[in-house]
Picture (cartoon, rainbow, N blue to C red):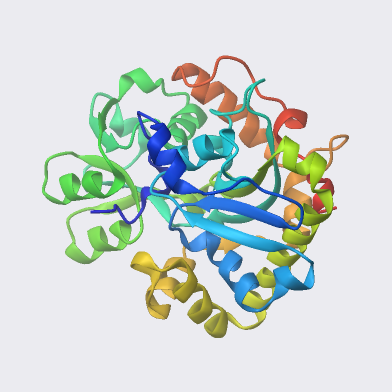
Length: 328
């Protein structure tokens, strides 16, 4: 059965047959195809489509829901998709000389939607030394956890990481099998309601670190700049609509995203754990090549953390992976 939070899990094997099924055609003038997992932050895509914002900007869109962001990235690399919606830290693992793409806009940041649960005896990150923490290795969960330890000067080797999905990690914690786990909503709330532990820390304490981005292949940016600019404008218009009309927006987005978020109430609950980025927030976060924003901090951290974990071979620079011009 499809894991409802598959957006951050990393596939070990990428099969050409699977990729062919993900998307049927590459982008062409006037049309952009985008792969994404089921996640509340991608709701504005469907809102913009339903309200005709993409059409207003002369862009025909095709969205492909993929079980795993790694599969979407591989499909994009094979020319089956124009771009992918995924987290900023994840894209660093895929950027290479042979696979060129750049993030052009932001969807949202996790603002309490991700977190670490622990038994009541653990009161700080220092208390995790020598203990087992369940999490999805190679995912944003591990990136965020490693970021927290790095801030405290705690080597990752001092904590034993038990690899499992975020939902399985929460289940193992609730069952008393591990003293701590990195997971996300609704698991954080479930732990509190069952009174089996506490949320030691959440992404609300680390604003701007777990961020979802919109990225397109460099060939698309070069050949379809007008389409990309129209896409970004439509997306940001949808975010403005959401802030002005949340209930109406959530109902439309829930229907579009579907899956575990198909009910407006469930979508609204999930949306409480994220912060949608409008145009001004995006400009501030990305900055410019001459004066980069907060994004550089996450790029540096991502390079350091994924390098330590053996996921990247060389540092990825701002200019290699960010193009703010389509928002500016």
